[in-house]
Structure formats: structure tokens, C-alpha cells
Image 1 (cartoon, protein in one colour):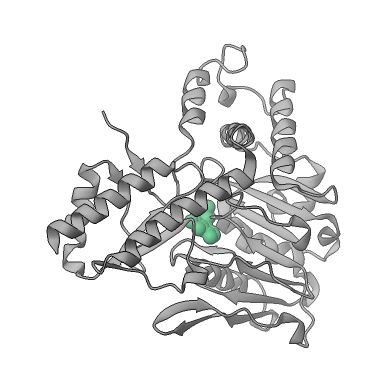
Image 2 (cartoon, helix red, strand yellow):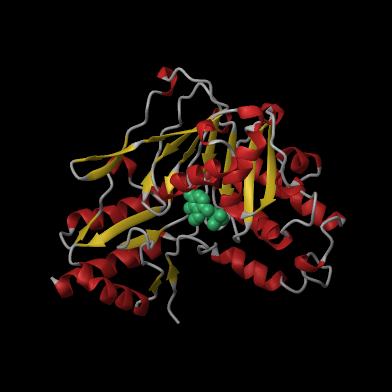
Length: 363
Ligand code: PLP
């Protein structure tokens, strides 16, 4: 059977080598004769795994010593409420930058938890010549005292990415769910980073939180212990039974990243993959993309067929060719090719060949 390339936005494809290793280890991990899913999270073997996972992640992202790394439940969305509950006790205020569906969902969640007056939001996307473009505000010119400013570096649904790091007088809280480890960032510029795992890390349900230690001094609201960052730090992310299999797979993905040159090597290939795909879209009048070049996502390439009556046929033929999960998000329609770290260049080359051929056949 020829290779299937899975362009799903998440849960997304994981590195093939990791999946093959996991398959081999499924019923006998670490020579224990049982799966990693079946052993105690307090066993010395599992603790060693978690310690190694953290060391590798710190190495990959150059995480400074004054940051804690947490492995938590609840995926990306859990952090929408966790940041509010952990940092906005005693009437603190926060600013949310809205660049698309996910940052907008984060605001909705935040406003459910505290008084609406505590959550300010700013829409930072405008249409310029018919294209969506991010216009970052001058945060230093805003004369308000916020506990944090929240933004989403990559809008997975809309295909909009912000490549600049924010220049902010307040701690930056960033949803990096769909960009984490796709290119290097300077962690020291952030108060807290979070990411649902199911794109560049591992299985869904797990979220990674990287939090600067001084953030934990902010007053918290009463909340569930398993979602309290301080409790998570105190208990090594094991106040209750953690998602052990997801943690194991994440550790394997981290090891794979190191073996394949780390984040900068990923960034290089990610840039090539995205350029290949956007060149195909731009050079072919059969396709279009509505995002300004400067903000085009390197992880989630959204595009439309100019004749959208052909959408169904496009998806059917693509699937036949082994190119699956290209349908755009239900809220925006069209197509979306998610090309995270695990998507090989060959997958994007195959997609581009298919798109050119499809356009020729249906012109
Ligand atoms: N934030 C971003 C940028 C996402 O892409 C997603 C999911 O795709 C989420 C948050 C929500 O993640 P989860 O479904 O793990 O809660």
C-alpha cells in the first residue's frame, strides 16, 4: 500500500518512527513485560521517563531554570480557564488579543469565570486588500495594568500565524497549541506557554504548560486542585493519576525531535513545506488563500477552490490518492492542510502534485 499522508489539524499524524517504536513496546515496555499504560505512575521506571521527558523538552526549547514544566490534563482548552483561575484572583484584569477562532474562544471562556470588566479584548486582524492581516498593537502605549496579555501564536482554524514575539509590559500568556516546537522561540519572553499535545507533541488530552515561577505568586481563584499550577508544581504534575500513555508518547516525540536535529531543523523543513504549498496556491488561479503573506501559517495552510462546487470532488480524489483530512474547519469551509513537524516534505510534494493535476483536469 502506498503511503497515506494525514493532513488532520489534530489529533494529527505523529512521526512514523515513534509510532513503530510504540507499537513494538505496546505490550512490553522497558523490559517489564507489561505496557507503560499498566504500570504505576509512581514506579521508578515511570518517574525516570517523566524526568527524561522534561530534560529533553527543556533542551529542545531552551527553557530557562526559572520556568516550571507541567504535564496536565484537559488539552488546550483546559488552559483557557486555568490561566484565569490561577492568575485573576482578587479582581485582577487581563487583556486578550483576538486573531481568530481559538483566541476568541479563550476570551469567551475567560468571561464565564470572572466579571466581564476583568477581561479586555482587542481584535488584531484587519482586512487589507481583501486579505486577513495581523496588526499588532503597541502594548506599551496602553495605560492599563493587566496581570497578563493572552494571545494565540497560530490560529489553527483560520491559518493565521503571528511570527513576532510580543513586546509587552505585562507577562505574555501564549497558546502555542499548533506551533510549539515548529520553530525556535525565546521562552524567557513569556510568563506562561501552553499547548494541547495533539499536533506537535503526542496524543490529545495532554497539555504542556511552561510557567515562569514568579507567575505562581499571583492570587488564584478557588479551583479544582488538579488544575492548580501550584499544586501541579508541588506534585511533579502527579497530584492525581496523570495521562501516562500520552506522557510516554510525548517523551518519544521529544527524543525523535532531538534525533532529527531539534527545533531549528524542524523549522527549516517547515518553511520549505509551507513555501511549496503556498507557491502552488499562488501560482495556480484555480486556488486562493485569504491570508496576508506575512501571517500565513506554516502549520495550517488554508486554501479555497475558486469554484467551490468542486470541493467534494477534490476531497474525494485526494483521499483516493492517499491525501486525507484536507477538509477545512466547519466554521470557515474550504480546505486546510495541516503540516506539523511529523509531516514529511514528501507528503507536501505529493499534495502539490495532486493539486496541480486536479486543477489541470478541471480547468
Ligand atoms: N488552541 C488552539 C490554537 C488549538 O488549535 C486547539 C485545538 O485544536 C485548542 C486550543 C484546543 O485544544 P483542545 O482540543 O486540546 O482543548
